[in-house]
Amino acid sequence: MVILDGKKISNQIKDEIALEVSEMKQRGEKVPHLAAVLVGNDGASLTYVGSKVRSCKRIGFESTLKHLPEETTEEELLQLVSDLNEDPEIDGYIVQLPLPKHIDEQKVLMAVHPDKDVDGFHPTNFGKMALDMETFISATPYGIMELLRRYEVETEGKHAVIIGRSHIVGRPISILMSQKGKAANATVTLCHSRTKNIAELTLQADIVVSALGVPHFLKADMVKPGAVIIDVGITRVEDETKEKGYYITGDVDFDKVKEKASYITPVPGGVGPMTIAMLLKNTLLARERHRAKA
Ligand code: NAP
Image (cartoon, rainbow, N blue to C red; front, side):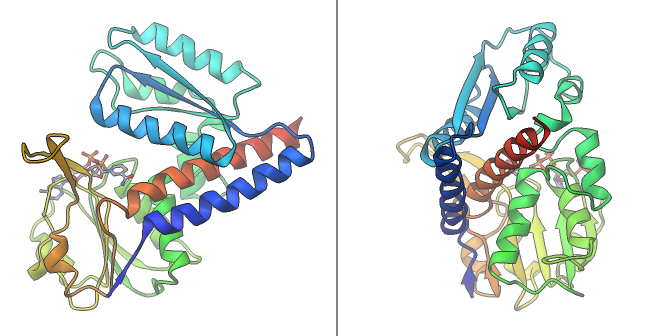
């Protein structure tokens, strides 16, 4: 069994990007600038945004954090989005989800200019991704594809069962894995909460991508020997014995499933760090595109 070490691979990708950034600097070019918008003080969101900003520093990107209070109105947020769209200094930006309940998430994501949408959530970018066109691919599915590519995991002709159909993980990874190309050409089954007998499907799977957010959902008796297991889930489970008062776990019963798997991602240290690395890669791409247009 091989652990798909997202931490290691994401560090390699960051090193590769850092090298490109230092070459940009030597040529006297502007370096990529990523902005992150965070509304409110959700603990997990603060952690994610914090590590995105730290990663920018590490690789030599400029970064800006726009941290707005919980009571920010939709109008105020849309104004900030419009300002970021117009700001020539910013190459790409993300609006950290979830947004507070009084703000229409879709309205905000639709307002992000597709050329700066390094999260790849805008319909223009999602549509291009679905049509095999070059675009910003959402960082989490992009990270999964990159992990599979770098470990040369065979996907062609394999049966991939995806659990979860969200617009940011399950749906896009189901599209990407069924497309032509490297780490793709799989036959894909997409499951969700209305799917009957998920275990019957996962038992047929050569590759399982679990993205539902239910701790230890995927048990060893649901997995075929030799299967490749990608655990996207990140859930904070309260635990008073831990210093932070919680621990992080995935969707997979890791200790038992790893005994049957050929490859498996750990949580933490699997898909999570890859997501950040691919966001940085998208930001680099945004900078290159803006430079080409200038
Ligand atoms: P989401 O929007 O809540 O979607 C969850 C999906 O799982 C839905 O399609 C839902 O079905 C399905 N589902 C829920 N319970 C199920 C069940 N018992 N059986 C079968 N399907 C079930 O979640 P998400 O945003 O995709 O995130 C999923 C998990 O990945 C979360 O733990 C999240 O924290 C994590 N995540 C990790 C990263 C990373 O970087 N590693 C990035 C994003 C998300 P319905 O559509 O029928 O409701």
